[in-house]
Length: 437
Image 1 (cartoon, rainbow, N blue to C red):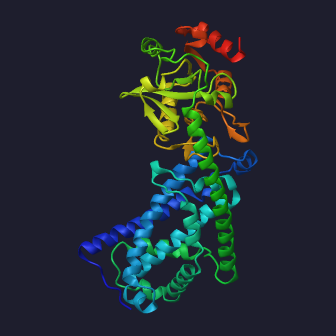
Image 2 (cartoon, rainbow, N blue to C red):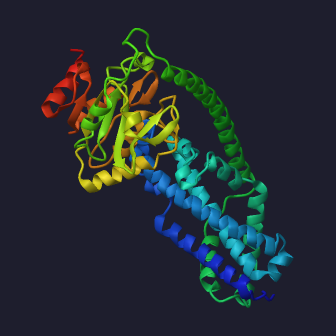
């Protein structure tokens, strides 16, 4: 059996694919199983959701895996095209066969690691199927991998290829293979020494588990889609409606001059909590304050704010066209603040969450921008509370927990019809508004 030496541009491409496979193998060895990274699974199960820090860590790790998986799938497709699926061609195209087998084994092992993590923790399983456009991960990505990894035909072919290699291992090592394949053969031998997903009853059991998972996910997704559609319709309507008789028609109480005054002395990272006196949504939200936005103050797009049209950067003329506001400053150092702002910025472009379910991060409500930006940074931690059957963080609860953790009141405006107040006067005005005095 003599493997054909690959030369020219094709040889350089092949060498690059070999390096890709070896690099991914070493990355997997260094990182270990994703199950080992999340030692707080028990806490997550009791809590029922991931904190923003846990969600961010999961998405960084998962997106890295997703990129590697895409690269390996490209290699596998190219090698299958060259080496085919029969022993005759495997012998004739030894380099392509060896590379394809190595990549296939790596893919199965890495995907199984994520399946084990998902099976151990339902909140993580649900989070993995959410879209993450900023990192190029599409919706239901985990379900698609789960399905592919349990396909009996693919597993049978992989098992047959591995057995063929083990039966002709010495002969393959005598092949005239391209330089650099030595590292690949070491990786292949290491992967062949690991347990492979079983065939027979074991594989059938795995496939049945996937079908049960898929059945539950489809029905749950259908219910959630219907629920979200209903809430989106009602939420959009409520956002547009005004309470009659609350105040005479006319401009908002905070004028352009007051907006200019408010913005003096504010910093990126300050949290703006605002109110429209006549908003119909005030009737459905607890307390005096219903809405929040995060100040950036750069490049003309000064606020990151979630409204019915999604999470977008908006100018002050839009965000501060309100009747009253208060500004809270987080107790963070400069470097910590930059991390928080970067985390919040990563959610720009997502849809608005009309369901107000803070357990998922693919769409956000207004206060969730603040929650996902700051939670876990510099010792800050926000507890979600059940409101209307949903785990969320209403603006009033955000204010309460923020003040308890050292947030300072910087400025208030429009409370009780007054102008701009700063320092202690602003803090007293905030407390009056919350106490109904």
